[in-house]
Amino acid sequence: MVDGKPFFNKSCPPDFVFRVLTNVPEFQGILFTIFFLLYLMILCGNTTIIWVVCKHSSLQTPMYFFLGSLSFVEICYITDVVPLMLSNIFGSQKPISLASCGTQMFFFSVFGCTDCFLLTVMAYDRYVAICHPLHYNLIMTQKLCVQMVMGSLSLALLLSLELTAFTFTLPFCRHRLEINHFLCDVAPIMRLACADIHVNQAVLYVVSILVLTVPFLLIFISYVFIASTILHMHSAEGRQRAFSTCSSYLTVVLLQYGCCSLVYLRPRSSTSEDEDRQIALVYIFGTPLLNPLIYTLRNKDIKDALRNSFFHVPASDTS
Image (tube, helix red, strand yellow):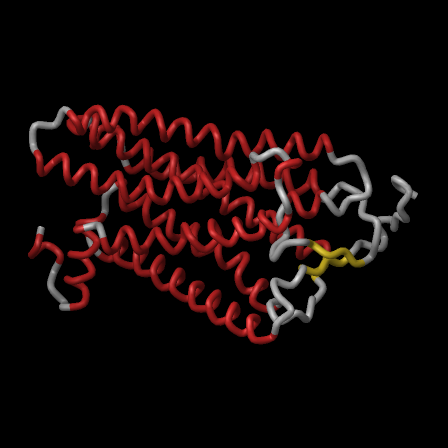
């Protein structure tokens, strides 16, 4: 017995099922169609960004290298979640093993953390480009860009491995447990444990601060300097171009960090699992969808490269 509940030993690992989003068949079909179409749009949009960045030499710059890396992470991030969610949307509650749940949690954490770190790296890139344009090529070397991306991934791997291992060392009380979510996220899994989870919640809170609060503060500081530099520009066209680029980026940042903070940094007493599910839908689909839309519709370089590709015009013709 653990906390008055029956406990099955580790020789009989539990299975998990996800709580269904709705029991109404008509709504199930509508939700499946919407999420499937959003998934296809995210895959197509981010794949297009990766393709156009790799294809055109005019986009072989640090900014677009980071953008392509972010798009790749977004594809992995959404693919870790959506196919399994779609397979359970019709209320069948297919069981998922402990190992499969742990694997999904690990990769969801890895790609989510990497996403946040890459947004910080992109803010630093914009800071150097706008505040120190004469030194940009000296600072943002290809080697440094690769190191920043790999560093983001390595830190995300380390934090995710520790968090996943720490979560699944908890004891569980039954052979079949229902997760009040559509994915194996850390907090919903912790709530199913048969032990005191205060230490685990504290660890999750610390990791959330490292992944969300610290990067957001770095982005905020970067953009204070960027805004100051833009306001002192003499060229109205230069100011407009800089503000356009930065506003697009900040839209993605506010959506990502705002929604994630509501889920992971709010006090547990002021949150509900149903609210967390709804907010999770926004940041899981919102950021990967906004990213290609913003950078294709509002970015002249990407639009020109796409136009050149469709009409088979060499990129150098419009440079």
